[in-house]
Image (cartoon, rainbow, N blue to C red; front, side):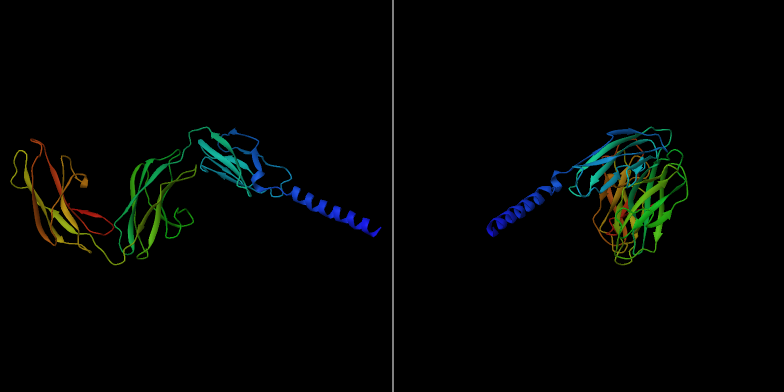
Length: 308
């Protein structure tokens, strides 16, 4: 009798282990779906999205919700979508385990409201503890923006309102800039322009720069009057009264048939130090007014100093 009892207990134990392994669900086998593929919402309205994780008895039902363009519509941790301004965005629900996702396209009619359009320009005039931030607003938005400026940080590569801010007064479209002081030497900074209206905040791309390790300055130079002028040639040049710190590594002239020539069309002139330098330029267009400026560049973050 004892032998038979032992055999029965052994069978029961093995069966219990087998059933336990069968009930375990692999993360790779789960899936997720939303109750809507597309949703039209007017600005200011909200609606809930419902996510379902399969199989329904999967133990971890936690879901993360994100919006690809939060300025158009936002989503809460419970899947509640709120339309903000005209445009389109994609709401994504992602499982905590297995990284499976489902999406819903959100369409918000224009309604006349729109964010400003802003871009960040390359940072200029970088010194030991200062720099000039630059931006462009190409569209004021609807309604027009009420605040513009720059967010910057030495740690956050995409600065926001939680980082340092410099407001720039003004309105309308066009360039705007700010000289920011109090920076730390030999430090990488990240900056981006922004403009804000009642719809939300529009950002430009992020520009990075490194402050100087020691005090620097641009070269000081002036343009000389052209001499030996013919129908197609002239002698052009300039004068450098200060070589800059560190000293410039390239100098020359910029030529154009319009005012304020840039390095788009430049002629490099060998040499170092201060004083006059000239170059004979031929191949000019006959009966055309030619403008020229002198230029010198040092390793002050690759900046160029033009004469007046």
